[in-house]
Image 1 (cartoon, rainbow, N blue to C red):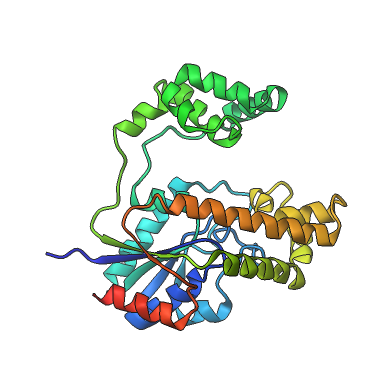
Image 2: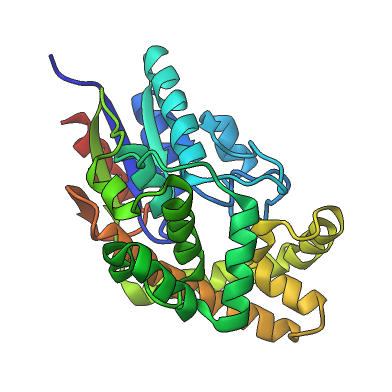
Amino acid sequence: MKLPLLVVVLGPTASGKTALAVRLAEELGGEIVSCDSVAVYREFEIGAAKPSAEERHRVSHHLIDIVSPLEVFTAGDYSRLARCAIAEIHERGRLPVVAGGTGLYLRALVEGLFAGPARSEELRARLRERAAERGPQYLHRMLARLDAPAAASIHPNDASKLVRAIEVCLTARQSMSGMWRRGRDTLTGFRVLRIGLNPERDALYRRINERARAMFDLGLVEETRGLMARYPGARPLESLGYKQAVQYLRGELALEQAVALAQQGHRNFAKRQMTWFRREPDVMWLAGFGDDGAVQERCVELVRT
């Protein structure tokens, strides 16, 4: 018996993933499951580049505006909720379409995560203090003593990953790499069709620059001012666009500097996304943007075959 289909639309920021997902869902009777680490937060609108009200009216969207800006939301949380949403969409006789650019969330959804211990905020705080005092290389040396294979796979300057790896080793009293080798809870019951958008780089960068500037023109600074007042210290304020708006509001940057840094940040992010997604297995890569009619027609054909 043929397994039901799960469509995944992936690609770099500003490549038109939402437009393509909406077209596929409309054409093929589907619903969209967002795969975006900022879109999950309520009240973060302009900088999150969430689907428009009109797009959400045309097609049902899931996992948007589901948590408070002050909540901690992990890849594991995303995997659990996304799998529930996908199962419910299938039960309604609809096609689940996952769309977004957060590679870790997508990997957690499809491949699963190892059953690591719960977060220890106290331990994390102590480790961050050590990193602030002695640099992230100190954490890297600590991890190398606890779990050499894990240390070899993490950049010495990536403090957040180093903190989590050390936390796992100390809390579980076993190596994180060993837990990975014992396997993960992979998604079952669906055949996954991955469709990747790969527009020409210069065209993508132009679109990224235009979108980042448009965010500021549409009121990103004003939105950020209100979010800072209501949710001081909220983690999504560190995301691209919001981070630069915060720096502007604090007087650390001029407005044009903030726009330029947001543009550069999004371009760098697009590079990292493509590096990550090229490691994904069995991706059907398509040249062009997801809002291009020819690309959309090709994708509809792929899903129907």
